[in-house]
Image 1 (tube, rainbow, N blue to C red):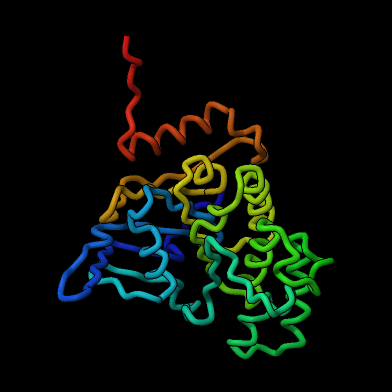
Image 2: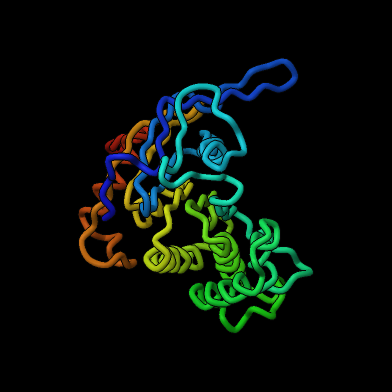
Length: 264
């Protein structure tokens, strides 16, 4: 477990976001407060359409907040969204005409990093995500899970300080999703990047997160945030443990689910 520092890497305080279209206003995020320590993997969980992606876009610098405080990094470590963020989406979004290696290299090209060093790092990252033999393949030659591994490598290639993941395994079948959850833990344990992982899967939120933040139905409001402390290595078997069940029950309760007796 990564402990919270005195000065969190990410600090959100009473954040609001209003979308304005065709002269009308839509409140997407009403009140989100969250601190994230450097090196944590925080699960952001809530119902579909509740504003999770909006929070991610604010963290990425794609949207400004309309209220509250947003700070990332510190005075000793300034944060530049264009350089210090890596993003992984629900779809891998690999360019079909580029090889896997060249897809991974894309952020380095855009930023203008020295390509010799970037190519070496890209190859190392492909090894790390289990695609070392697939650098010269094209996206259509990979399975869905393999494409998402390549997308994760792409998000890491420019060595960002923050990785934002927007339901990256939501489009995968159940078995592949379980495999990718295990793979994600392995990648995080090696990279130790700060990760904010959006999901609507309660089990996935508990299994992956060192901390979990629960958002209510939109407009998003922070209902709960808590550390996830599970004994032993996180493998599929841990999902049957009492502690795991306790955490999932806590999230269900925050989302308005209550135990009911079957009708007699």
